[in-house]
Image (tube, rainbow, N blue to C red; front, side):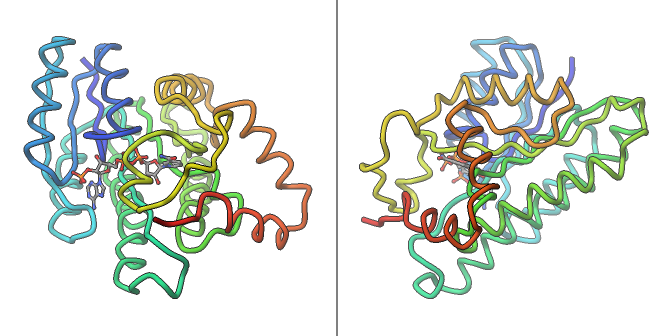
Length: 255
Ligand SMILES: NC(=O)c1ccc[n+]([C@@H]2O[C@H](COP(=O)([O-])OP(=O)(O)OC[C@H]3O[C@@H](n4cnc5c(N)ncnc54)[C@H](OP(=O)(O)O)[C@@H]3O)[C@@H](O)[C@H]2O)c1
């Protein structure tokens, strides 16, 4: 059975990946910080889908957590979903510097280190996939969050280009750029999203479905949903300063 390791597997998009991959027959390695939630998710998925589930309790904002995660990834995974992430409450100068640095660690350093840990084994085995969860915020200027997610897109494209031509193209690296999805994300960041219209919300399961389809097709930057494909396409035509002004306001009201 192939094995998938998902970071941030206990909630939201990560949990949706876990359900879908278990249904597809993947054995799972679930990673997050909350050990009780991890154990519960592992039990539920095992019971429902009869797959092997393993948990890794690790805080990807700490060196110890990163080392634990790297070690498990090096032991062999067929699919790595670098999904763990969060938003900070407030604009740049209103967020403690330590929280901004933690964000860079979880969104960038963890993605880089786990990708680095996963790829040699995948290339040796001649197959594998890495999905790095970014955001449509990557295409706009939107504080440290948008900047970190833009890094994820650029990094993933760069690595995909670096390994092109190896393993017959059977090892794939893709950045996934979701728009708004109902998860714990906004509540954790105390964001007020009541003004976001219904059509802007993506369904978790459809998002995961589109992501896996795009990975199979060899897409390097996946933007699920017609509305977001249009927004990202348009954002390339509008002056960057204007995109930045609009996007730094949308969905950035805090409770
Ligand atoms: N929801 C959206 O609208 C949206 C849109 C675009 C992109 N995204 C991106 O999608 C990804 C998943 O977000 P989500 O919306 O599903 O959020 P979520 O519901 O809040 O889930 C976040 C997951 O990440 C884990 N996590 C957070 N910090 C961690 C850390 N330091 N170390 C290890 N695990 C950690 C959490 O578990 P523990 O707390 O137990 O660690 C949880 O399992 C993020 O990268 C986010 O930026 C979300």
